[in-house]
Amino acid sequence: MEFDLHLHTIASGHGTLCTITDMAKAASEKGLKIIGISDHGPASAAAARSAYFRGLSQAPRHRFGIELLYGAELNILDTEGNVDLDDSILSQLDYAIISMHIPTCKPQTKAENTNAYIKAMNHPNVRFIGHPDDTRFPVDYDKLLEAAVKHQVMLEINNRSLAPDSYRGDTRSNIAAILNLSKQYQYPLLLSSDSHGTEQLGDFRYILEILHQTDFPEHLILNHSAEKLKTFLYPKTDA
Image (tube, rainbow, N blue to C red; front, top):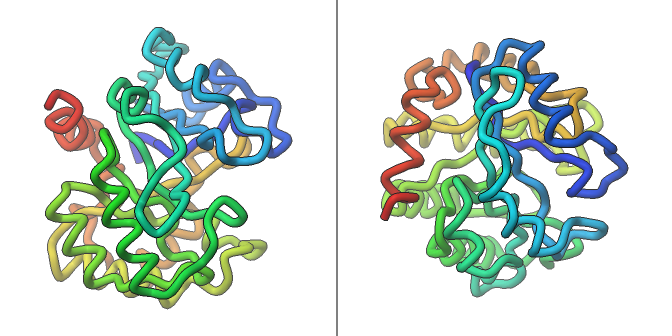
């Protein structure tokens, strides 16, 4: 794997004290080429305010030989797909991940959750859907994949969702559905560690187990190629 884009620093709260510099140093030691800093949006408890995300456009692009991308993990706030950063800020980021979290978003019906994701895709630089496997937020994966392909947004397979201590429930059947649809559409997926700090940065161990079990094709894993990542990201960010 050449990159990990779903990473959190001290700006996300959650008790981690790791800085962007700490993350870059750890990524260098683990042999990655690119990392993406995607701290939680300001609706999350103890997360950074909007000014932090606005200032990321001025942050260094290379540290310890690692290329740094700057994004955000947005909270979807309601069934209309509203998120917790202004579009003016999102347009300056490299990418955004849209996610549903408790308590910033109340679980709704499968149709309402699906429509909320689809509407949130219209915000600038939304390129990924974070942990759509969460059993607390049921989703119509057929409709979600169809919309994701249309909007050029990728679904994420989240390593923390498969960890033994995951709080998202037994996500394996949901992940299996996403993998099958990815094969059907021949549309790639993003693998993410969702590491809060350096400890799990670049760690995809639980994802790799299920990919091997399902004989998932390598060409549908975006993380194998930094070049493919750039091709995927920049057409939309340049628009």
